Length: 189
Image 1 (cartoon, helix red, strand yellow):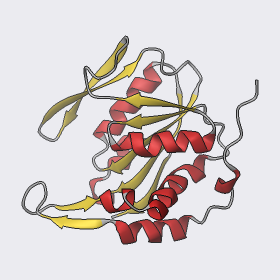
Image 2 (cartoon, one colour; image 1 turned 45 degrees about the vertical axis):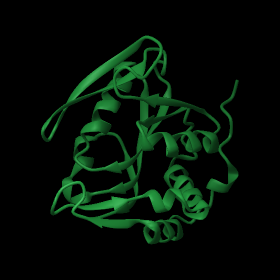
Image 3 (cartoon, one colour; image 1 turned 90 degrees about the vertical axis):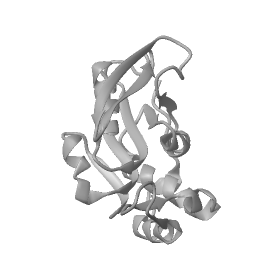
């Protein structure tokens, strides 16, 4: 059985125009969650049909010809973009969640944060050896969460075709932790 074809609207999608539209909808929130931080709030993107559609297509278009078999989204905002990307690519969606949220047998991984540790889980049958996957999340900061998700997937034998983000905080160099996996970010600060 041949893989389904991606949505034809991805073929000539204008990434620059999408980035401009989405950037105009991102709100800066000073001193959140702590003093000195300028939080990039994407809720205005989510509440605009035009900006949300542009964001999803832009995060998906670079991988349209890559024969993606599953899109993996990281809890929680990765679910929003990932499920829609899977639909555009004509493939299934897999959630990566915090502990205790998935109902079946899981594989987990713990990873270091700046101040502590966290854990991610995935169903044991979520990806097969050799299956081509795209991993999506809203933000690339230090890269720890995405690196952990990629380690879960490669441990299952999946082939990570790429990692896609709405926003990248380039000064934190999270992309460096994800090598050799190709990364795409619509907007970089």
